[in-house]
Length: 201
Image (cartoon, rainbow, N blue to C red; front, side, top):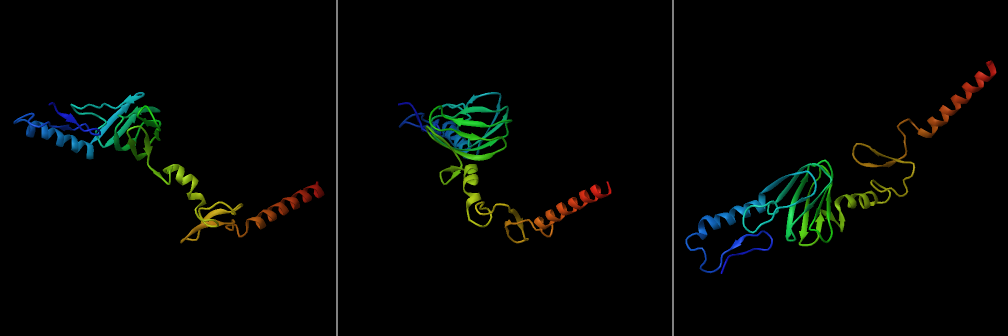
């Protein structure tokens, strides 16, 4: 019976009695090397358009490695194998990279982002919190976290974010002694100048 291969990392599994006197070296050493790549390896991929990760039972490939390190031109779509796997992704390309298996949901990694992406064999998910992508979570939750204090927005119309050196919060502008009073004084001064010009003509 020939060797079989694991579903996610494509590691060789020996059949009973197979590869006598060769299983330890080189075959077992090859499996250990590929485990090393899957745990700590890096695939450096220069994009010049859409890309399909190499994936093979026999031989080295891009998809097995733990880190996908993209550079080159973006935007681009990168197709992953339809297998369960977690990737550390660094996008140093010039535009966003969309990770997909060709089916299911996709994960968009913006330029200069470093994040995790998880594939369940069909869908690809970016790092997220509370069912939202990390960026969506910050936008949707962080600014409304605690009503009446930073970073909540409701009830703080006309205020600015300021700090007293210990805590930040929403406050009315007071750095000009009093912004409203300052604006009133400026308007009054302008009125006085206009009146003087009209009088002395």
